[in-house]
Amino acid sequence: MGPIKHDVSKQNLDAASKELIAILGSNSVVSDVDVLRAHSSTPWSPAPPLQSPALVVLPKCTSEVSEIMKMCSRRRIPVTAYSGGTSFAGALTATRGGICIDFVKMNQILAVHKEDMDVVVQPGLGWQDLNRHLEPQGLFFPPDPGAGAKIGAVLADGTIVKTRNRPRKSSAGYDLTSLLVGSEGTLGLVTEAVLKITSVPENKHVGLATFPTTHAAIDTAITLITDGLPIDALELLDSYSLGAINHSGLSERHWKEKPTLFLRFSGSRPAVQDQISRAQQAAVANGCETFETSGEKGKIQAIWGARKDAARGLAAMKKAPSDLFLSADAAVPISCLADMIDWSLQVIQEAGFTGYTAGHVGDGNYHAAIICPKAEEDKALGIINEIQRKAIRLEGTITGEHGIGLKWRDMLVEELGEGAVDMMRTIKLGLDPQCLLNPDKVFRIEPKD
Image 1 (tube, rainbow, N blue to C red):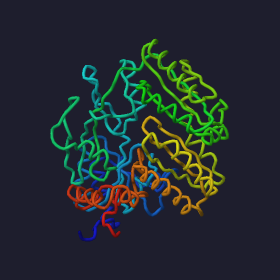
Image 2 (cartoon, one colour; image 1 turned 180 degrees about the vertical axis):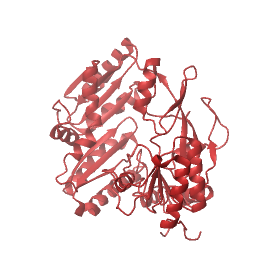
Image 3 (cartoon, one colour; image 1 turned 30 degrees about the vertical axis):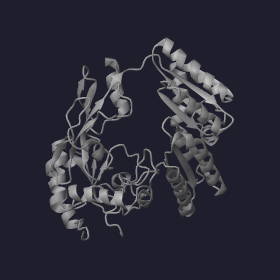
Image 4 (tube, rainbow, N blue to C red; image 1 turned 45 degrees about the vertical axis):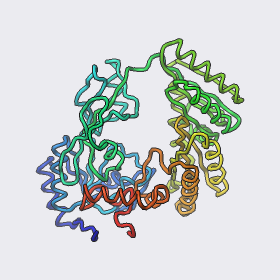
């Protein structure tokens, strides 16, 4: 392929701004410098000031997104998309300038089909807001869209497509839903989604168990998984995570700084009691030091809140505002997870950094994070790459959740090989030959770039 030819000249962008105002209205086309920076750089994934969009636009519906993309296609203006703003891997960075489409105004629930147990939503709607709407109807969206999700999307040239219809299962054609959702905004912009929902969980309880070692905690988790115990969630925080939470003051409770499993249960009262009993038996068999459960709302929030506070707790360990938060979210076979976590902590500590690990131990995915001074970024990134390569050697993956973004493009080649990445590049050029959508993410558009 020849060189990419975008046009982000002032003349072209000024003309584009006038067209966008005609499409969206002046209040939905933003050029404030602080807003532009906030749409490309996050505390978890900072971007250079020059890699910001020139405009942020706020559409309200699929047809407006389509008109925006038709204009950008005609004017050869690159586009990034913004919704939750939680990028860890540089996915929001506007490497080639252009326009950012923010879906904040596309936050509506378009339909609830209670009999079919699905819901139609726009992409700017948060799952917690969705659940607040669903709860009075006895419905619940677990934060995992599952295989039954379908989406509506806008492609690089403004074409509107749907990936499938609404039945619970379909084998009609390619799995375009997974292709588009997994593309990190490089193949299309999701503007509508049909998601599976369930009934609100009954008799919710949480539990925690502390252990002397990571291996003891993971062995307990493996026992629960292999025994088929139907636990809603199974999470691990290491001693350093809990120490960071204690240091930060984010929690009213002082936590034992030991490897700790966090468990969530629901179901009928007899079922939950059985789950708790079997979980406690497994924990005791593996030498747990404490085991507690609660069904009280306040305690549920306090216990489960600790798991959610881990990243913020580590961020509070920064010694200077300019310190960086770097993380990997590798996933490995569960049987390898304990060794992987212990090894990761060892290499982080040997390098002289503050760090922690937290795991979604039910699926072998864990987060290893480092706090480091800006001057030592390259050294810290080298540690993250070591962790990722170790995961690959264990037949795992470099990322279970966060994606490739800008940071891990070369590591993707190490994991999957040139052939698989070339296949992705071919798909990209087939759907977006001008490379307008989130350019430079997932892989290098030109292999030698």
